[in-house]
Length: 410
Image (cartoon, rainbow, N blue to C red; front, top):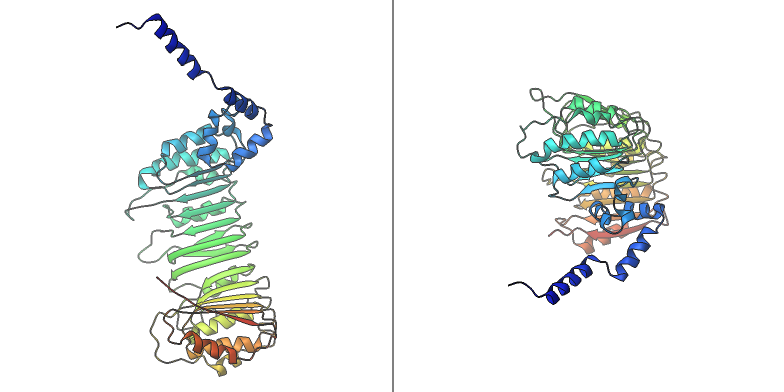
């Protein structure tokens, strides 16, 4: 049945009202349009990418503003549409400050080739690539455009799908690189042996390596290095630790795990860590070899101020070994601990060797201010017994305070 003329006029009026913005909306749109371009850019640069793209609906001046905002960070959450990422990169016209997708599954490997081609054109500065593979044998070679990203200052790689030579070339092709993260990189082996490859980056300031296995990397030329965090669960039998530590000689802050070997792995180390202010080690004070390696490093770090030790023992130990007061006193030199102001020891089991070490530092470190002790959950001593023993230790520094805690695990 056909609507009456009056009803048709009413519907037409309602449609016009819906299309026409409210007075408040017109005022807000005009205010947004009147903002200076510099302020619009500042607002957009602080927003998450999705929010920045959605500002195109705010007002006419914002319609395509995000496409030309300098230093926009392109980050994506898990499950993002890879085609949407490609679309954003195609429309964005400025250099990319940061590109960081959540992770790249096998289904998105082919999309990553498009991203790298566009990122090379946009002069990406911070690049994070997190590759997830369900099958370790599945092969994917990165697009050669990645070697054209010469403006990189930060590179984070996880599950890098190429071989060691490609990774070596990628790092060497980034002359401005300041930060390098290598996380669980898997490289093919050659009959159980890994090819040696070098990390060369003259401007690198921060190096982070977290690996289950030692994949043959070597440090060649890192004269600007300020901080290094090296965490490898199992080194290969041919690893030259003296060469490795020498390559880290310029660092100011170092975190390193001393492997539980039967020998002092850094015996003969002559490199002086004159810049080193903070040292964090994973080691065993019970093992004679571990204690020797520790003191070898300490003697070569005359300006060390902060020492943190995370204790670990891979084997159940019934009796204490050779690390006792006599051994520790034999390591003493007049300049040892001369600048040490803070020490932390975690996972303490209160073995004789560990207690002797704490007693030794407290009695020798003349500038010490803080000594933090954290008992392991499995430590047989009660909190009261441990504290009672610590209180008895003589302190060379009148300002030294001991802070006590016990680890608790769920």
